Every structure is written in C-alpha cells, then in structure tokens.
Image (cartoon, rainbow, N blue to C red; front, side, top):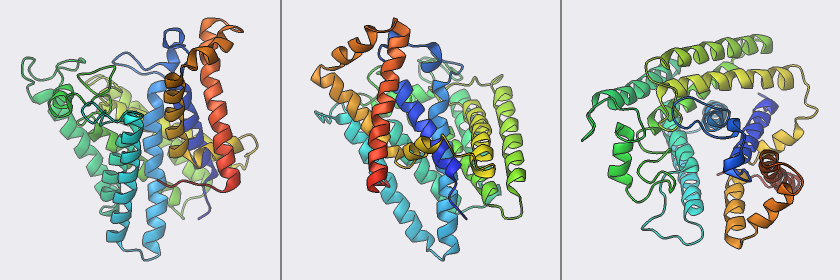
Length: 358
C-alpha cells in the first residue's frame, strides 16, 4: 500500500501547531485559542497533543500490519517497540533536565514520555488483539479511569472530586512523583500517571481508523465517508459524556479522549480526501516535510526555547516583534517565527535525507 501523504501532512500540521502554542512571545498577551483551557473545557491548543497520539495509532497500524504480513516475529516487534519507546522516554527526560540534570528535582513525566508509554502499551494491545479486542481495551481503560476518579476516596477530600486539588489523579501524582512534577503546577502533573490511561485510548482509536484505511474492499471515497461519519459519532459521544465527566485535558478525562479522537478523525478525513483521494498536494509539501521528522523537530523546539532563555537573548528577540506590532500580534508573530525557523531545520534534514526514527 502506497504511503499516505495526508498522514505526513496532518502530522506536520499537528507538530507545527505544537510549536506554535508552546512558544508564545508573552503568555499574558496570547490569543485565548492558543492557550490551554484553565480547567474544564477545551481550546484549539487542547486538541494538539491528542491529535498526535491518534496519529501514532494510525502509523502503528500500517507499520505493524505490513511487518506481520511479511512474517515478522511478534516477539521481535515488541522488543523493537520497547527500545523505541525507551528512546523517546529518555529523550523527554534529557529535555526536562537540560542543562543541569539535577536528579533530585528533574521532572519525570512529560509530553514525549507520555507518547512513549502510550505507544508501548498501545502496541502491545494492538499486536495481541483484533478490532473487537481494541474496542474492549478502550472501554476498559476509560472505565477503570472513571471508577478510580469517582469511587476511590482521596484522603481529606473523599471520592469524585474533579477539581485541580483533591482528585484521585492529583493525589497519586503527589504520592508517587512528589518533587518530580511540572514546575508550574508542582502538586500534580498534566502528563501524570492515572491520566495516561485514557490517553492510551487515543492511540487505540487511531489504530482502529488505521485498520479502516488499510481495508482493500473499500474505495477511497467510501473510506473517507466512514472516517467522517465515525469521527462525527465519536465527537458527539464525547460531548454527551461531558455531561457526566467534563472534557478536561489536564486530567485527560474519557470524554476528552473520545471527543478529541472524533475531531482528529474529522480533521484527518479532510486531509485524506483532499490530498490522497483528490490528489491536491500543492501547498502541503511543507507540512509533509515537518511531519517526516516530527519527534526530532518537537524536541529541537524545546531545546531552542531553553537556549533562548538561558542565553538571555529571548527578550531582545521578542523586542523585534513588539517594535512592529501590538502586544497580542507580537506574541503571535514570535510563535510563528519559531515555527518558521524549525521548518528550515526540518527542510534541511529532509534535503539531506536525515530521518530520525526514535
């Protein structure tokens, strides 16, 4: 089966969005859609990470299915997956610790660490089940999370608390990861332990859509229709579940996992129809270049931000934009400049044939 150009482009759009929302010139003068929701609810920014996990599931389906069909041993595939996940996890730790690497306070969770864990567990489930088993795993992960968050009493707060302090996920993070969490929250982590459970569901939803894309008995137009219909159903289901447990990225509620998987499918369906089915690839090449080295570019964006802060150059660079635009526009231009600089890096890597497969 030929390579899905739309998947590279969609991955590139997602990574570019990650860089955009992670690097505002000034957080106090950032347009609201480019900030995370304060707690319950969602913004554009809250869609970026689950979209990437959803694409991990699609890519995983194509990669493993092809190797299994070629007679690859599942044990060796799992070993390869473990090595790759360990490398992504280690890369996340390296970024978190840069440049001092104080092991007493280094943040253990993180975006890359969550990607690694979800990829590893999602792969294990995918390689040992069929689509019904994957659906059951999604239901099981979300149900276990729901029960933990609503039924298990937290000391001093009781069961069912869904506020930043006193919820079961926060309590576990503070119990297990004390001193090693996100510096802005300190007593809980947005990529914490319990909230990883429904995040795995995003990967498995992507795997199910990947299986749909691989079907030989469906024409591309039929696949597009199914992707859009099923995506709309998931988005609606997530909205319905929001009535019982709010959509919340910070604790990655099941309603959030289902809702964002639906929106990811709807968005990708449009990419797939336009780029792969209709063949309109003009103007999307830069996105594909971004998407072919997604993890490497994301890691470099974090490193660049750290270096700008450490060197003291950041205020001077940002002042260039504040001199030519009002505060909110200047903040956006600074973020777009980050996207542009890192595109040049991705373009150079692509031109040299450097594709880093973590």
